[in-house]
Image (tube, rainbow, N blue to C red):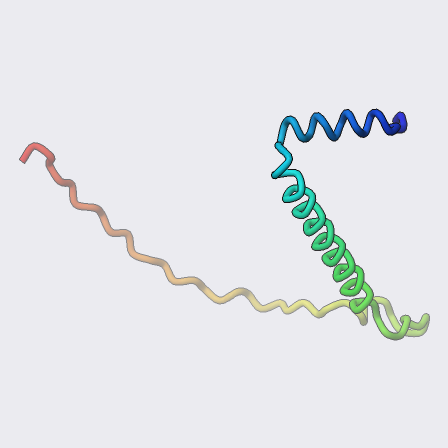
Length: 95
């Protein structure tokens, strides 16, 4: 990807001013900055959550690997109620 020089940036800025107008550009730049800040904060929170989920002590070789897995219950789910089928009344539109 070629590097943009000074003249290319000036021409690009001029085209942006012609397309969007001088009044909209600061608002657009502000919203892009806010979006970048929110994205950065979310990524930081994601990294902190991932770090908090890590176990405090590493598993030892003596403990079986299946001990850290959640237990699965073999009970069937509760039955759901069956709703009665009600037929709709047919209305004659010619009356």
